[in-house]
Image (cartoon, helix red, strand yellow):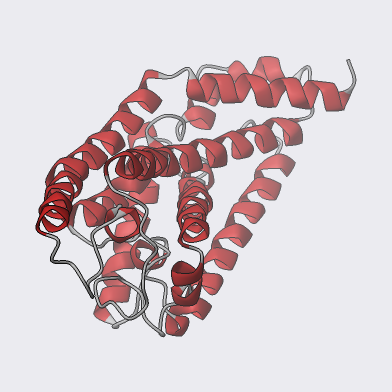
Amino acid sequence: MNQEEKMNKLIKIELERAFKNKMLIISVAIGLIIVGFNIWNEIIPARKTLDKLLEMGKYSGIQLPGLYMKWMGVRPGSYVFLYYFIMPLLTALPYSISILMDVKKHYVNNIFTRIDKKKYYKAKLFAQFIVGGFVASFPLVISFVVTAMILPAFKPESVSSQFNFSKLSVFGDLFFKAPFAMAVIVFLFAFVGFGLINCIAYIFADLVNNRFMVALTPFMIYFFYYIVCSSIGRDGPMEYLTASKLRYSELKFMIIDMVMLIVLITVSYFVRSRRKDAI
């Protein structure tokens, strides 16, 4: 078996370790519970309102409540805030302490005799990103699908004031022209954004010798940055990762934040890969 085949096998093993994990089930379940509360308290009442309007026939000139008006990806509210607030903690639960535990249990000693340590750390980083992205985006996909089963997919009208989009929104025009494409962007923002944020634990596994602190680092930094951004009057990751809230004035900050995070993750990978000790 050549190195590439070993690398592919290692990635498969790490993904299986991540996804065949009760903590991943718990993380996804918590996300789905938030989605469930949102559907019960927001979507079902909207369906009742829609039925009454249709029954009365008095809806001329107004935007009827539909999928693209009410689902979590485009509708601000307490459940959306809670979802995006705790997501770094949920994404970290299944896999963030994996590297640290592999070292403590001497699992890496066995791995490094069979494959280059660079490939091991690359596989760990890839798995951590995928797990974070999956935990963050999967409940949103379920929210969209279930909402689509309850509410019709009325095309949003730009003249209506009932949508969370304006000329200041980066995706405002796209939302009104192709709302399903906007939904895909919401999924991608959650997947990529929280996948990268989850990799903060990958950085700190090299710096903190405590598994609970390692698991908490993505949430702690995310929350601290939210406080800092709020105090200086600018949006932070909690706002722009929602996608629908991303404004042109904040676009440059999002790009800077993401580039800086990618650079830190990359530096951490190369530093760890070149060290003589395991971690």
